Image (cartoon, rainbow, N blue to C red; front, side, top):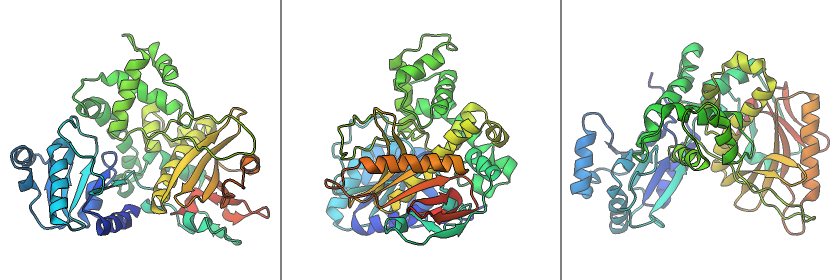
Amino acid sequence: MNKYKPRIADKLLKKKLEGIGAVLIEGPKWCGKTTTAEQQAKSIVYMDDTEEGTNWQELASINPKGVLTGETPRLIDEWQTSPKLWDAVRYEVDHRDDEGQFILTGSAVPVDDSNMKHSGTGRFSWLTMRPMSLWESGESNGKVSLKELFTSPSQLFAENKLTLEDIAYLICRGGWPRATLQKKDVALGRAFDYIDAVVKKDISRVDGVKRDPERTKRILRSYARHQGSQVPISTIANDIRTNDITSTDDKTVYAYIAALKKIFVIEDMEAWNPNLRSKTAIRTSDNRYFVDPSIATAALGLGPNDLINDLKTFGLLFETLCVRDLRIFADAIDGQVYHYRDKNGLECDTVVHLRNGAFGLIEIKLGGEKLISEGVEALNNLSDKIDTIRMKEPSFKMVLTAVGKFAYRREDGIYIVPIGCLKD
């Protein structure tokens, strides 16, 4: 089972290697960082290899340059096991004075960065990888391009093949590359395996602090229930306190969440702060998200049928799936994904904002006329508040749905697009 499915990150990595000496690929375990890097590397060092990893780590502590000697681009996989390599790579990039020398991959930040004396500015470029989008895994037909929506096409049409049952399965399976090649019943187990690895080993290995597996599970479960919300740490602490035999204060929960962020399990979303006509107070708290929706379903012990029977939970976790895909697509077009909410309760699920100042407003709904109408109303209400003298008008407004026969442009210019039709 060695079939490689092309990733959006392939083009991003190639472009970065053409312009800078070293590229650091970060992201959660199992998301495909190493395999993607291997497609362009000319020589490889596996720092955590069962047989050779210890030897490489010892060499890195004694003679880091020895690890870096080889045909370029040279891949150093799981580099964070030997943080001294950071400055060694920086030094080599400076003295070789050439692009595309090194690719570093890491599924965690270094435990100890005290020996990392340089930030890497001008020598390193960062590339974030996540589990696969539906376009990369082959479930989306890709008939609608997020990039092309920024040119506000007057005509848009595509047919969607994904059903509600399909979306429920894809949420629970997640975008783990290995899972996309497996039978459905087998693939659904990958997210549970991932949770087990996180709670039993990874959350403690990240910084050498021993953490309780059961407490980690409770925090993950609470985080799953609050996907897409702005709940404070105190709410999560209160959520788990009743079932925790030892005292769990806010500081402890914060430390666990910080560790989960270091291993890229959690990826919260920043608030968007536009120029508005009125002085409406904008809520600036981050929205809570996992890097993949399957982490949430596994933490809650849910399967596809559970989502079908609980549409409220289904809707929340569908939002997490859409956020994952939009983040992947936004990276490809020099954009970032934000959320909006003000003191009056006006919300916009996601805002894709490009470096050039262009932005698109997106509401995420399962589908159906009523929910789509609610999404359209929210988009128009926010659009009406934006001060277009001080910033651009939205390039597009879109309701992103789970189901629906077609992707199309309404008479008022708003796009209705099923996630099964979207690509970068």
